[in-house]
Length: 332
Image (tube, rainbow, N blue to C red; front, side, top):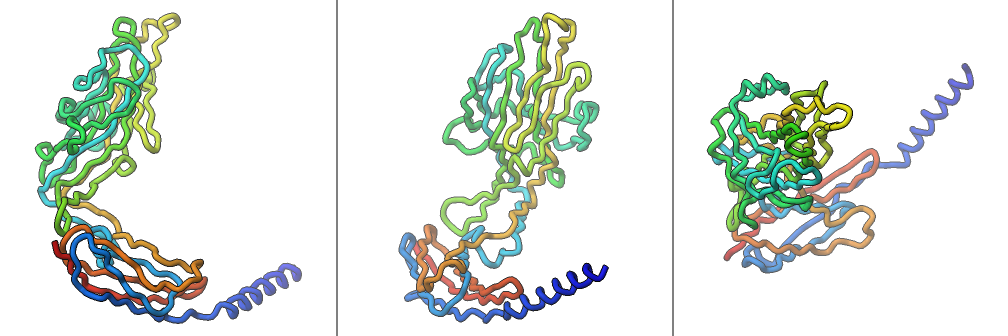
């Protein structure tokens, strides 16, 4: 017991000693200036830097790179609507005729009154819009974009959205009896993305924020015959794999039902979009011994931007930062 006490006491004394060896840090000495506050689009803006700091980060002031939104950016998209895109690939099997416009097995569905209960009875009780024909599909195992006229825009689904309600997107996979219709094919869906029609750009080309992507959509599988003829569909971190039940023509030929297997997203809200914090670019870290004397940046669109530099000194127990801002006007 005494040995344990002395070991504990030694640990406390060691920690206290270490803390004494890590004094508080100094506030960075840091200043930024430019030769002008007005530049033309495409010109190099040179920020002259004096002083020292261990870590320096830069916010250009452009959308999604604005210090004012460092804690998070919530976009009120109102009734701007949304667009949907994904990629598909198909492999193996013989069932159905492969077509870029009428894919065998697969349908793309949307609902605004699905209850959110992921079971077949709830799916059947909901009203689903079949939007399969709005997209194009792979005819082999080479993934292609769903945009019907490449490099066209993602497909608009604004007409499906009901104010105040979320929308659910689903992939409905139907396996016909395989004994007479051929073996089931494997469909893979990747790069799922719903993009808002809301433009958050300052000027120039539109910047449309992403409402959700595949990881955020939280797809879940629902199988019509999970016990007697379970589908072999699966979800990975990047892909929805849709595949019918295993058909055994020799040992279990009678077990050959028409079967549905659904992959359904979680509710997708299009009117309010949480984009998370705007991001800075690190232009100096503590491992870089040389002094930072300038930083250059090129703005590609006209507008007025608040360029922000965050200078930080830090150790394990303390940190101090200073923020410097310069308003830059970019003309056409």
